[in-house]
Amino acid sequence: MAAEVPIPPSQRIRAFTLGRGPLKRGSDRLQFAARLVLCVVVLVSVPVALAIGTVVHEQLRATAEQRAAELTPVSAVALGDAEPVQEGRFDGRYRTSVRWTARDGTDVEAVVTTLGDTSVGDTVTVWTTTDGRPTAAPPTSSEALHSTVVLVLIGWSWFLVFAGTAYAGLCWVLDRLRDRRWTRQWAEIEPTWSRRVP
Image (cartoon, rainbow, N blue to C red):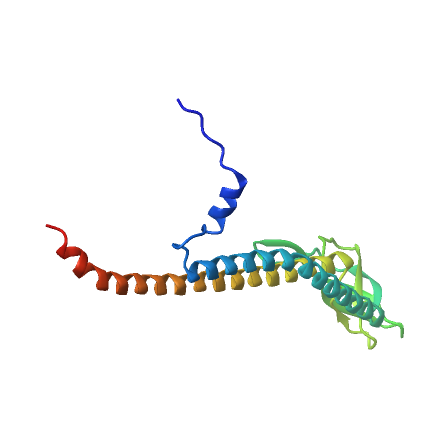
C-alpha cells in the first residue's frame, strides 16, 4: 500500500481559495471574499458581544440597586404553608399568606411570593413600597448576571443567524448566476460540438 503524500500548505491554501488560473471566475472570488468577511465578522462579534454584555450588566445592576434603595424590607410571619405558584411546576417560587406590623403599628396581611418553601410561623422577608404595599423583591446580583447572559446570547445568536443567512443567500444568488451562464454558454457550444460527433 502506497504511503500518502502530504499536501503542502500552499496547496491547502490554494484549495481553500478555490485555486488560481483561467477556471477561477469572478463569482468564485466574490464568494471567497464573502467567506473571509463572514469569518472576520464572527471573530470580531465575540469581543463586541462581551463589551455589550458588560454595559448591559452594569445597567441592570444599577437598576437593581436603585430599586432596592426605593423599597423597604420588612420581616413578616407566614400564616400558612407555602404552595407552588403553578401546580406541577416547581421553579422555586411559592405563594403564602403573611402578616407584618407596619410603621404605624397596624397589622398588615397579604399574599406574597417567596423563593423558598415556608411553613406556618416561619419568618419571611417582604419588600414594600413607600406607602407600605408589598411588591416584588429587587433583582439580586446573580439574577442580573443571568439576565445579562441570556440577553447577550440571544442577541449574538440572532446576529450569527443573520450573518450566516446573508452568506447563504449570496451563495445561492451566485450559484444561480453561474448556472444561467453555464446554460447559455452550453446552448452556444452544443450545436457546434454535436455536429463533430459521428
